[in-house]
Image (cartoon, rainbow, N blue to C red; front, side):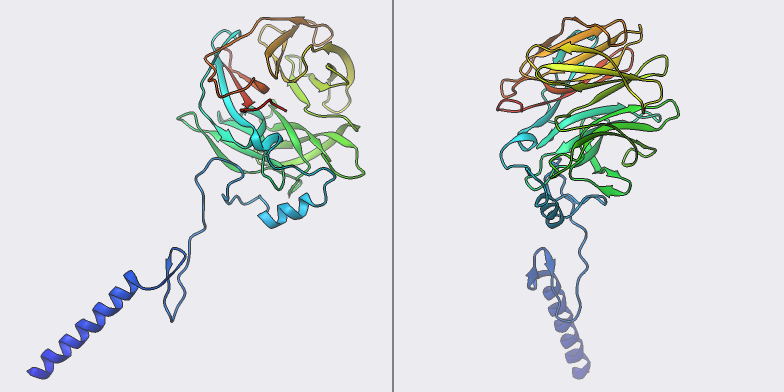
Length: 338
């Protein structure tokens, strides 16, 4: 009988010791280590919405890969400037003239937003990441509570491109998404090109055509007219914006120009009445309207109210309009928008 009791005590002590070791034993990082087997760790996912966090997305390069890409650029991104200090916010309007600021920080360290409604009703927002090591594009989706959840890095022909920036996306009649964007940004010895690309999933794009090539292009914006033609705007020299029209989305003819006093970048949108509006942002928010598909423009009235004091300007606006409410995604920062 004594032997049985002693045996039970020994077993209990040994079991308790193993339990204690498992619960309180030595740790590596956040995982308990065992001398005889390794413990599987879950992939780390940071819930911080900033795109320069360590969140893991399947299409995105690692930090070391980004630094390698950056080293090949002529004028790589600098810490403390450009997209790294830009934040994305949203305005709303019921009359397309009077806009109210939500003042909710949607994405930090992010720039050049562009929103689009997909054929299945989702709202996607494309943007340039403001990481210290590299740029490149990412895409987020609006959630039911109004926040933006980053989905992934955007690829072109299966590859993440650090030199692809300034996205502008529209919904085609067949349900695909068409993006015009700036390629070869900061690539040594290469002209900048404005390309078009299409996607069925909103993340992976297939490059179609190089639409324009030159040394000073940036920030294209495009809208689909009611007759099926494409109207494209490209910032020109000085404060000029040039407008081009195309029936096939490949071959564009110059349609007109606009002298935009005060500079800044804007977004085109075709309105239900057949007019086209060009919303421009920088230190001040402005709107121009054309009733002859971009040949001539007149200044309209827009008012922004309720913007918090820690924001500066309404930069690089992106317009979404469903026929009733208008939304505008924009960048702002504590310093001057660049």
